[in-house]
Length: 156
Image 1: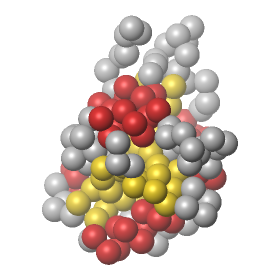
Image 2: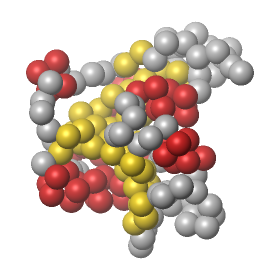
Image 3: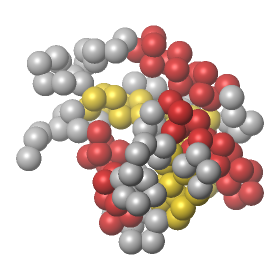
Image 4: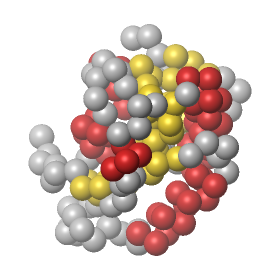
């Protein structure tokens, strides 16, 4: 089992926002196109549930590099996330974590019972549930998978 350095957020919402009584609706960044699809579905859900959108991005730093020195500069990451957030009708809080293990980091960032939306535009879905989605479901979270033409709630 690989050791994972403590999850360190690069950017966090203001403390006042975290104490907001609205339900957090988490969107897991998978890739740009899939996350756009997830945001579209999550925006509708957030409006209906009076929820706030929280984008989780686990930025993997390979072992030869120090955890504080990701291979992709933070300015680029902020630019991509800002563009994704600007396209939404709802307010978005983005949390970026520098880590060694993406799945472990996302699992650690969520409390059991969280509502999670993930975009899955890659081959194999819907016939194969992504491993991270299965892990999140096993942890006690409610997971919604979003594809180009399909939305599926995972019931494992």
